[in-house]
Each structure stands twice: as C-alpha cells, then as structure tokens.
Length: 360
Ligand SMILES: Cc1ncc(COP(=O)(O)O)c(C=O)c1O
Image 1: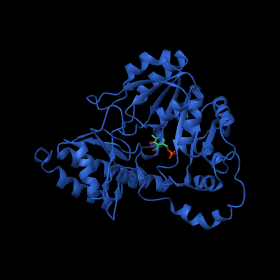
Image 2: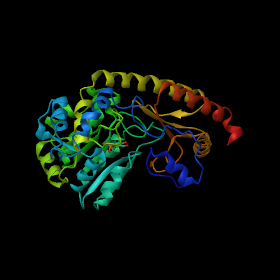
Image 3: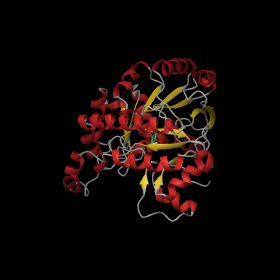
C-alpha cells in the first residue's frame, strides 16, 4: 500500500488510496489530547493578536524560562524549537557523517532527519515476540561503533516504556563508549513526569531529552517543543538554529500550558482509562495488543490491511504500520479520543472483527 508516512492529516490517506472520503471522518491516527487546548489558551487568544506585529523573543521567551522552571533546570540547559521535529533536525546535524543507532519500530523522523545529514544508520529491531521491549543487549553490543543512539520513551508506536534500569545500563555504557544518547519523551506527559530522565541529566552530560508540547496540550498547529541537555550541547544546538525559530504566539501559549497541572492530570486519567478499556476489548477479539503506557496502543489483528481499509470506508482512520520497521503493516495504532469516539470505534471494530476468519 502507498500510504502517507505520518499519522494525522487523514484526508491525505484517502487521497493516496483514491478513496472518496465520507462526510464525517474520525481520526484515530494522531495522538493528541482529545480535550483540545487548555481553556487558558483559548482565553489568551484575543491578547495574542496584539503580538502579531512584533518580532518574537529570539530565545523563545516566555516559554524558555517557564520550561526551565518546570523542570528545575538552568535556562542554559534548555533550547526551544518549532516543534520537537525541528529540534530533531538540529540534533541530527551534530552527527553529520557519523553513525547513529535507531531502535525500531519507532518514529520515522529520527531516520529521516539523520539521513538528510548524511548519517549512517545502524538499525536495531525490537522483537515482536518479546512485546517490542527495548532490546538492551543488542543496543549495548553496538554502542562502541556509534556516535549516538536514539530511544523513544515511551516508544511510538508501541507505547512501551523502557524500564529505568534498562535505560541506565545503555546510558552508562554509552558514556564509557563515547556515544551520545537522545531520549525522545514526546509522550511522557501522558504517563507521569516522574518517569522523565530530565532530573538525572546532571550526571550524564552525553544525554539529551527531547520534549514536545504538541501531544499533551493538543497544539500541533503552533509547533512547540524543547530539548534539555548539558549547556555545552544546548549552546551548540542554538548556534545552528535559525533566528526567531519559535514564533511569539507559540512561546506565549507554551508558557501558559506548562502551568496547567489539573488539565494534565485529567488527560492522564482519561488516556489510561480509555487505553485499558480498548486493550481489553481488542484482546477479547483475539488481537495481540502492545503493553502501552501512553495515550495510544498498537494491535495486531488477523488481517491489518483489510481492517484498515474496511475502517477507512466507514470514515474511521487508524494508523497503519507500513513504515514502522518490525511491524511492517501487520499492526495498527489507535490514539485515544473522547469516550464517545472510542465507543463508536469499538462498535465498528466489533462488526469488522466478529468473524475474522470468514472475512479474511
Ligand atoms: C515520538 C515523537 N517525537 C516527536 C514528535 C514531533 O513532535 P512535534 O509535534 O513537537 O514536532 C512526534 C510527532 O508525532 C513523535 O511521535
């Protein structure tokens, strides 16, 4: 199947497959908080208009200071960017002409940004039979030959959260071997801040943590993310970033979002509740489900290709896994939406999965 590389933008999927989209589309292929942006952001909107005719702060204030304060780190340890996607591109520049380890199945932008900078990729594929757990030994074996290893925690698309001791064993050995570590925590907000590696960065100057504001705060349209790392690493990343890389509207919105404690707690509760319910439902229909701890999960039905297109015909867009190495189209990913939308998805899936042997 020729399908778009990313979730979201569901109309592209219909276009690529030459299917006329139904009038109503439910998009489970993207992973943003279904609550929508915090109310405080909506209330700020009229005031944001007054900022349109001034240049933004070049360091992304007031967001820069707020992000540093949120994590209890110095401002010099933080760089803000036009989405985590831009920061991944800046990070990739560090490794131009070198070798990177990427653990699959995972977010496609690691390889895309590294390849664009001429970085050689060493792939480690997590085992499906092992529930896509972080393949620690395979990573440890390769660290000495690489300049960097990328680990997504929790991993997209499996939702599997590497254990702290697994991460530590890789990080410690990487330090001995002169290999840097990029931890992408784009979805960690949906689990708990206590799982973040940021508080331990002081001890490990060769580790960078990438964060996205997109997912938790449902603001994919404004593009905002940041990296926390040793100040020397941050200084180097900054030197390669375009001036004014974060727009003033995004910087103001981001600062407000980080103050939204109750909003975050509600989102975590909702995502957990819906994920647990969905996983139980899918298992009841004989599907294999990843041990996700995030606001999405992946599952393996009898025939993922057929289920995917059957659902598209009903106006339901799931995330295919054609470009997730190690899943290779056999799995589908679901992002958690509102309770009603999840109910509707279960109804449609139940009809499609009720007799998978007959249907495939
Ligand atoms: C694991 C992961 N990291 C980073 C990003 C990029 O996030 P942003 O929207 O902040 O560019 C995504 C987007 O889907 C993602 O899935």
